[in-house]
Image 1 (cartoon, rainbow, N blue to C red):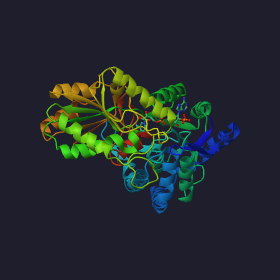
Image 2 (cartoon, protein in one colour; image 1 turned 180 degrees about the vertical axis):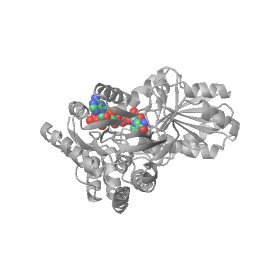
Image 3 (cartoon, helix red, strand yellow; image 1 turned 90 degrees about the vertical axis):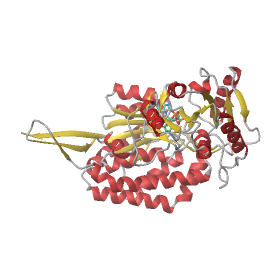
Image 4 (cartoon, helix red, strand yellow; image 1 turned 45 degrees about the horizontal axis):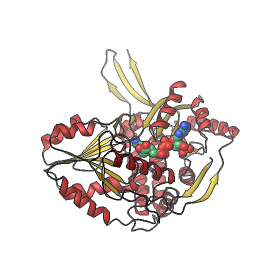
Length: 454
Ligand code: NAP
């Protein structure tokens, strides 16, 4: 299937794009190579200035780009606006901090003088998902170009117009043509790109299945990888927590983007003394959601991305209910709205059920109750994933204990897990490896070069 825009709320194919012909793909690769070789000689000042131009273009055309996200993948417009603003923030962050991250630094050694310098690796190839169709791409390309790298993008096949828009933003901002290129590549052509000697590294954000396939190809052709994969983040609430605040962020963490986020809270782990109160208030909040047309500025919960995604959630919920889960609200499709799964809360979730063991990529909250700190920790770590975790308590000794023991890339105390430019982002276990954002994200695609003088 070629690339196409199929509006999830209307259920109609609006635009289709053919795969890039092989000959043009090879020309694009060559252009990427020559452009990046020139680009890496540009001053930090020029690179930063162009990133600030990108931020301005995003801000000036905020509504247009946000609507594109909403039309292609169904995110409520208020959240799409937030996504574009966050991309502008990222550009400003790397424009300001990038030059200092890239300074040479002296290190102690047995030589007279030793230093570490940061050379760009070259052209980085990114395979990206649809769920944050601007933010995910910006997370890779902004630090890459600031560091002197170039980028090639294979975006998810359902967000082609977002891919084209991002490519044109970089050209309008003054980046040389060829430095960042969109490729409407087929899965077969993805191997051709990874195999090319022009491509020096591969970054994938997406499912574990895709991650495994792309990482195998990258291994075959000896290319550096960063993998940002699935998650099943726990949201642990103790009896001493600020329950109102925890509830407010539980709703956002679980239901933003219809739960289609790698760092959405997926497993709620509640202390037995507050569980009843938390659950009944959670149900009341869910029943008041404004659900429906994602282009309506008041909508909080829009459709899921497509029918396959709804069917997958239906299956996970049905299997979990058969195994003993208890549905308190939702638990089915909304037959009147295209691709809409009702916001759902399920308690008594067996730990061997799909809702506990697999990634729930939709508006379904799974709940377990605990009585001791060790129970909570074991429940939280009982997953193959290790992306983020949120812990709610007033006791800082307990908070520190959980920060140390949770097997995740991020631990948020008294907050939801979220990404922002200055914080390293990534996972452990089956959630992937490597980091994005901050100085760590930038160094993933650098030749960290040691120079010693004796
Ligand atoms: P996906 O199906 O794995 O797709 C991601 C990208 O991989 C798309 O561009 C897709 O292209 C491509 N792809 C899939 N199979 C491929 C193959 N065999 N060969 C080459 N390319 C292939 O994931 P998704 O449904 O878009 O995104 C949801 C997943 O991403 C969830 O698991 C979520 O947790 C994860 N995610 C993780 C993070 C993080 O930072 N850890 C952030 C966001 C999302 P096509 O569209 O053409 O198939």
